[in-house]
Image 1 (tube, rainbow over the protein chains, first blue to last red):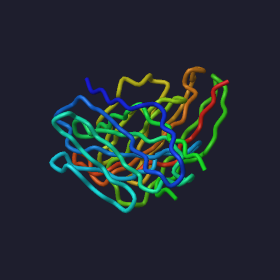
Image 2: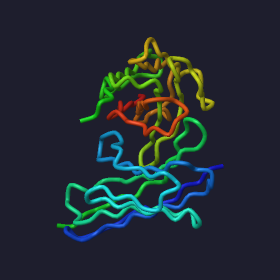
Image 3: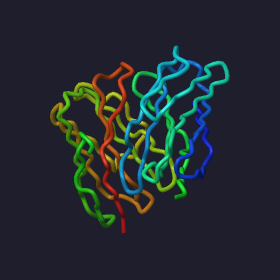
Image 4: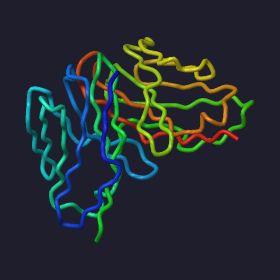
Length: 110
Length: 114
């Protein structure tokens, strides 16, 4: 079955870049997603990448995909305190299923 | 602000109660989803509706009963729940089922079973 792994915690200083990593096992994944979840809230879609791309940039966010190693990363430039949240990567498997990673709790230190 | 609206935001119920969670979207999405999220865990898929028909039931106990009365609404009827059912219940929708359209989530209903 699908297995999506992330580091549990990441701390960075305000203004630095954050890099959140994700590994997955399903080589047939077509799309991979990054979601942000703030305390007590639902999931906010941040960005997504098609599996035939290796990079996607959207303002402060850069997604890198290494399909050979099944490794996905999210880089947040100039990290702000408002970026503190849990970040989930997710892969689409089959027609409708999203499999989520374990989530990385990002703490931004002022 | 999310375009998927869930009510209520919080719900406390006893094990013998019957209640319903509601989800609404007006984006014209034809696929809607229920997820369950326990504390410090990722969301887990429960049900998928495609064009108002149930297409996936991930072996969810019958005390959870989904309903899709029209293309904008999704309900989750609850009856005789157990304390371990306490969780955040998330609704999501996507433009079309079967295509790689991203899923948009509501803010969830936080359910506590006494």
